[in-house]
Length: 238
Image (cartoon, rainbow, N blue to C red; front, side, top):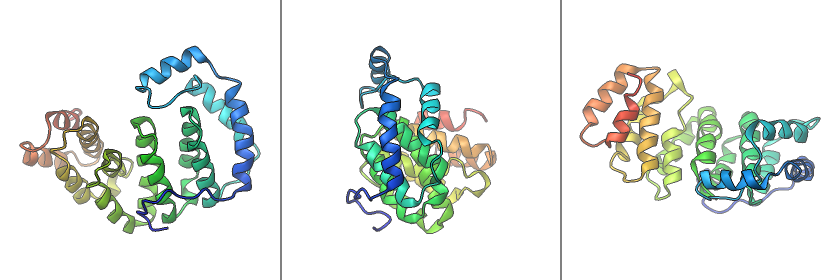
């Protein structure tokens, strides 16, 4: 598949994914808490139903699910993530996001269409932001030509793809392509969506830890086009 392919990816065959998916629903289902689930769903604006498993317990359960399993291939990662996304409860999506975070180094640029599908399917900040910083970002860092796809995503009508483009360099520090970061911020500076305005400020604030003078100069030059929210977030620690 092309790196910016918009077609839904097919779920590949994977014996490892079969094993994990045999274990996962039982482990998570036994820990479900309907009362907590309602509160968690409400906090996330009912974007998806929840099982009601608090994060520390969920991560402990995840360790039991993955115990004594081999390191995955890219195909295994794709199969596992796509199959988790077919389940409605959000904790299964979190399992996939955490799994990809641990194993993204085993994936190539060919994984980007899978990441794109996860970003645009049942999207909300809780999964999108982690996929941006810990899956898409490492893929771009490992294969710099993928940055051209980020230049496409920043203009996409899907705000979650644009947010991913803004946030994919969050962990790059000194390796940040500041020209691309500032260009992306500039191109969506007038966006009305809260999640884009917030992402601009967050991305700039994070880069300010590496080059505060560059961020100050950019904000001053673009103060007339940046939303007040973006400016406040960018300069919060300066």
